[in-house]
Amino acid sequence: MPIAAYLETGVRRLERNEKIGLYAIVLPKEQMFNYGARPVIYGLDQHNNARYSQGRNGERILDETVLPLIEQYRYVTYVPGKIDWTHEREWRWPYRGDIKNFLNHIKEYGIPENIESTPGFDFKSSEINGAGIIVPFVEDIPTVAHDILTLIDRGIIGRNTFKFIIAVESLQSWTQLSEPGALLSCINDNTFGFESFFDLSASKVKNYADSINDYVSELYSKKDFLNDNYAVEFGNAWVWIHDNQSQVVRALLQAGMIKVNKEGRYLLDVNLASVDWPLRRKQAFASHVAGWLKHRFDIEAGGYSVQGKDHYDAIPSYETPLKEQHPFYNHTVNVDW
Image (cartoon, rainbow, N blue to C red; front, side, top):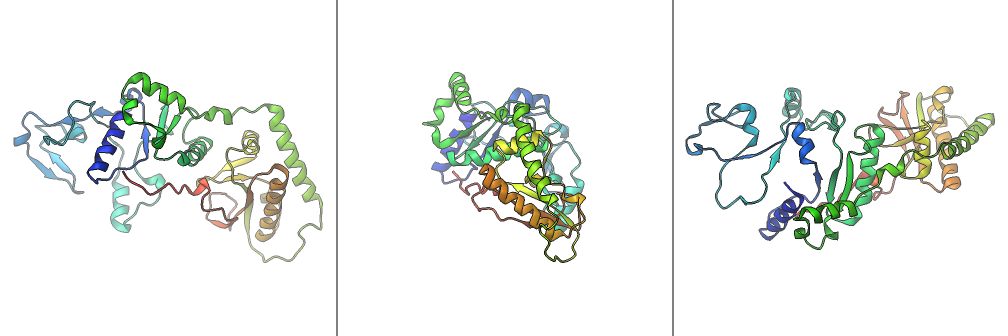
């Protein structure tokens, strides 16, 4: 539904003590149409006589002589007095993939196997541009921006997939967004410049990269550095830099020195996979470099390691704790209208 209609619905549900999430993804209708989204069908000519059965997973299935199965995701039962027939219709997007394995896993274990296996719209294979996010509070914006930038850096979405972040509390009234001109003005006023985090100058990237590489090389050259006795454990370690918007991180990403793992950690590779050290010595080395980064560039960083594996997407063995309020944890406020 349009942004103004979404906010209006929220206000009305609040008045009726109903609940609706305050967080929303706003997708461009014209582009979503190209990916299969369609407006709903409110009622049928013969709705009183429409026979239906129940599917294996509890879904309602109408007689296909009344409405083809492929279109039934769009059907909304006519309920007089419950729907504002004057505003633009709701749109829906159907998932056409195979959900058999997903449903079987839910049936057996009660929860999805992981987020990646959950059926949904695949931003990675689409070319959606100019989408936006609605959040309840201004303080949510840095957290959402952190998540969007992480998705861009992981290659899940493009740089231009999301354009704006609007905080509901900053709006005087939802009615100010009912006119196209006012809505466009609001979007432009709340544009988040993700492009500014990319394409740093080659000289700036080189300066950061050389500074860090020189320091790491110097540490490796000190043969007596970290010569304590360590238990024999196999694994690998990295430096986890916590602020994905810092210029240091942006430069190191551009230089190919930082990788982002599937959980969104920005990991600086200091070549610990190439040395035959016990895991805890590698952890100590990474933590030492993290401390130097904090002192040298005033950025928060710590150690991160996996045991028995070389790859950063393996199960973590150790990580420097973060403050609970850090955007990495995305503790969005649990609130409803």
